Image (cartoon, rainbow, N blue to C red; front, top):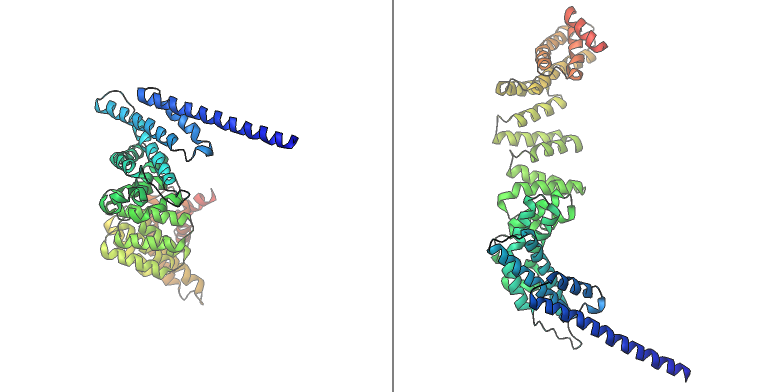
Length: 404
């Protein structure tokens, strides 16, 4: 009997607690609705409903969601009116309200989409909510553009991401954004750009499908993707993206040098690097970057005569390009060293060796004039050349420099 009494008392307590809790909740909702009717203290109405939704028991409470929506919507309308009347109002607040309205109604729609105990789905509010959100949706794009301009990339990304998400949600299927919205590619590009600026790889790659349809920014999209793939250690996609970028935009400053660096430094494939350079020179035969890259590759693989030929071509185009003189000088210098190291007879190749040093000399002297601070590049070669050509005065001067 004692146990039964305790159970009865406990059930009565639970019942009283639930009733009192329900009454308190109803009071909070009523207060919020009164604030909405008066058009005042809307911040308090929003805060009270958000506080109720923190309790998991209220997650499916239709009244709470709709009251929160009404408070936010009225805030939006009031802010929009102030802007229309050119009254003092923070535009950022309107953008943030737009984003919040989308978040609230999308969550409510997902709850409304759940089947009841009999497996039925009743969507009483979807159509009217989707219509309202479609009406204010341009502010998502505008908000993203605003925050991008302010270089607040994380915030900008939220707006563009939400704008793009609408095209996949069943809630907005009636509007067929994927077919009808011509701004999707631009929004995707800017979302990618913002994520890239924030260094967020996952978000950078999220909207690739749409972003690559933005032809106005295609080369930059490929750049962001290539750098992201490299960061993710996805070498195959990194090289593939560089290759596509180079083929489509051979003179764009990003793709060519990185493709050459990859083939030369990582893959150690000079043949592929030269093929890239030669295809670039077909597009622009006098491009100094392309010609210098070719001279460097030829120098590194020991095709010295061809290297000098390309360097001379470069010097004709730009006689102040110091590295062209360096590469040509090194080509002749390396020929002399190679011959000197391989000769069987002490005197047999001496004439040819001196000839190569003599040919290297003017290139190194010019390089020294153009780059006087780069002693580590010209001092030792000039020391060796002066020594072999018996140029005593010049040798002593270089010797002093090296001794320092």
